[in-house]
Image 1: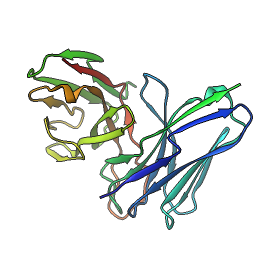
Image 2: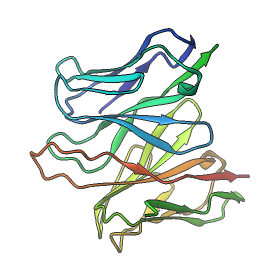
Image 3: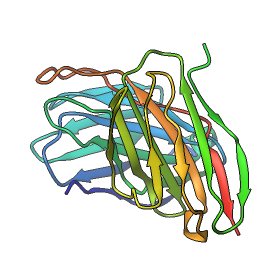
Image 4: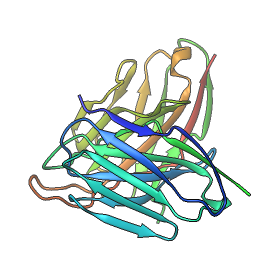
Amino acid sequence: ELKVEQNPLFLSMQEGKNYTIYCNYSTTSDRLYWYRQDPGKSLESLFVLLSNGAVKQEGRLMASLDTKARLSTLHITAAVHDLSATYFCAVDLNYGGSQGNLIFGKGTKLSVKP
Amino acid sequence: NAGVTQTPKFQVLKTGQSMTLQCAQDMNHEYMSWYRQDPGMGLRLIHYSVGAGITDQGEVPNGYNVSRSTTEDFPLRLLSAAPSQTSVYFCASSYSSPGGVVMNTEAFFGQGTRLTVV
């Protein structure tokens, strides 16, 4: 059974600070996704990580994947208030050929304060 | 391009009633899925489909039925609503990926249906 664990679940940051969100998963997978969700809204795709060592960056967010350690990180650089949201990692249930079914972590609720 | 469209956006049901949540996508995606989101639980997979006529169960399938008669539509049926089914429901669709080929299969999500069962 594939399990996905995120930590921390709650993160309160000051503007300008750096922090990392961790996503561990329990079995082999070759696809990992990061999503953002604002309150009352749907999920917005941030990053798609498809191979060991993959690193993607968009603005103040950078995601990486270590398939051997079964670990992905989402690093926040110089946080700003607009980054306040809940961030989910999700792992594809099928290895070697996706069937579009994902297992999600419980999410990290990020609050950036001035 | 509408993407993934869910209807209704809000619904209140009485215990024991049945209803169907609608989901349609116009991206010609083969894969479609239903998730429910509860506070502190993340999203949990209810049912998924890899193409018309093919469905399978996810993590929490009990109390829900699905069918996939066309590529575009993937309705979710609640047979006899219970308060435990109060949740936000998301439908998602994604591209297919041939076996052995690692491709971008990110899921695109609808806006969600907020269901309350009283």
